[in-house]
Amino acid sequence: MKSWPWVSIDQSSLRNRFAYVKALIKRLIRDIQEGGLDYRAMSLVYTTLLSLAPLLAVSFSVLKAFGVHNQMEPLLLELVAPLGQQGTEIVNRIIGFVSNIRVGVLGFIGFAMLFYIVLSLLQKIEESFNYVWRAKKSRSFQRRFSDYLSVLLVGPVLVFSALGLMASMASTEVVQMIISQEPFGTLYYLLGLFLPYLLIIGAFTFAYRFLPNTHVNFRSALVGGIVAGLGWRAAGWLFAEFVVNSAHYAAIYSSFAILIVFMIWIYVSWLILLVGAQVSYYHQHPRYLYLPERDVKLSYQLFERLGFLVMYLIAEHFHQGKKPWTTDALSQHLGLPDLMIEKILDALKERNLILVAVEGDQGFVPARDLSAITVSEILEAIRTSPAETSSIDKNTLSVPAVDHLLERLHTCGAQATEGLSLKDLVDA
Image (cartoon, rainbow, N blue to C red; front, side):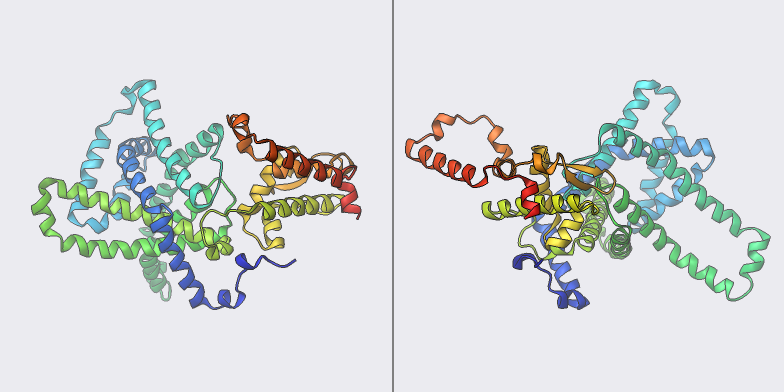
């Protein structure tokens, strides 16, 4: 089946890497300016400043129980390395503040408040990623609590334990003897050079894969992680040059200069993280690169046609015993963005015409026997908008001439679909 002309992909431009990258850069700039990524990065700066101390306090307590808490300071120094000497001062103050927090004397309520503040930061990040990925629903409270808790408790322990294990192994006699032999010595030197890049790319890839409440392909998450990781390292180098040449800021802002520079760096870091998420999204859904607007709008006639078409395809596969259609499969088959297909599927699910057969794969099947689903039901589901449930005074919308016309149209539609079931449509 042919794609709709206005959302079709120019295959030649996709094969031309330069043209694709050019289109991607244009779209990213537009998303930053018009898509609200900059505002979301700003809000994350505020949330980060509020949650930084509780986050480090919780992580420090967990890491201290496993004896790897000493690895926290080198990681923080690496994250604020672009700030130079000011970054070292910030880390020393944060570590000193966190070390003085006695989690044991906070009590249950105090410890619960620490966790709540930390979870609110992760929830804010998830909401930003869901916005990028057009995910309409956030995690449930149960999933949010379990998933976030595993990240907070297990993640730092595994990361810092691995770093500590690598450092201790490098100092053993066997490893030192291996390193003294070529080409292992050169490989070890190169590993030391590339390890910071690999770690940051791995962290970004994990965030893109795990945090959005939707399915993200590993390859797309990795592409976004590579772009964001390299971009973050490059931005760190440029920001370090900015800090070196910004001595006049200290003269203007006095002791507040270090805080302002720190906030700017947090903003740049969050913006790069969100841009990387956008790159992952466009890699997995390249059709959205060529849409005129971020939000897809369907005309009445197109929505009606797609509604019948999607319902027909789902019923046909079910009738023939084939694998249920998924959102992604329907998008690929019809040559349309996922967001369009999701709007149709939501309208059909609300009227109990289709249901999810396989929760993990999001495969859809008819909710009832095909002969029990009438075409008039499908038409009513497509034409009825959820907005009709809002409190609107029907009398203000009533004009006799218009009412009579709509009644005739409804009668004509009912006569045209009378006695016609979905099974009749599939059999035809």
